[in-house]
Length: 112
Image 1: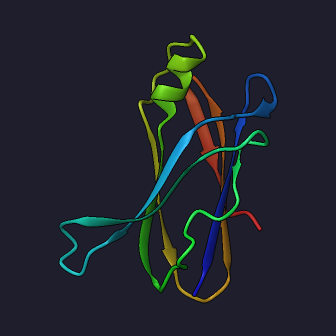
Image 2: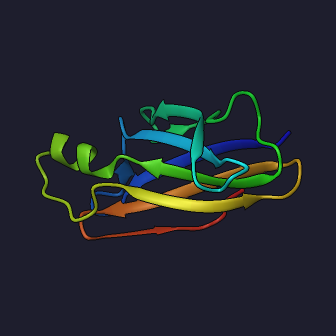
C-alpha cells in the first residue's frame, strides 16, 4: 500500500500554515461518488505526515484543503474556499502533495 503526506506553506509570510483541515477521498467504482480515506489538520510545521493511515491502493484520489476556513481564522479574505487536487496512485510508494498558499493563488507539485 502507498502512503501519503502533505505540507502547506503560507507563501505570503513564508511560514507553515498551521491548522488547515485536510481530507482525502477515493473515487468509488461507479466514479459518481467518493469515499473518505483520511483526514487531518496541519501541525505546527504545516504538515500532516500520515494522511491515509490505512494506506492507498492504486486508484484516483482527491486531497482537499479547507483554505477558506483557514484564511477566515487568520482574518484574511481569500478567493478559494477550498483547494482540491486530484492525483493518481499507481505504485506502492510514498506520495507527498505539498501546497504553497496565498489568498489569491496556490501551487502544488509532487514532492518526495
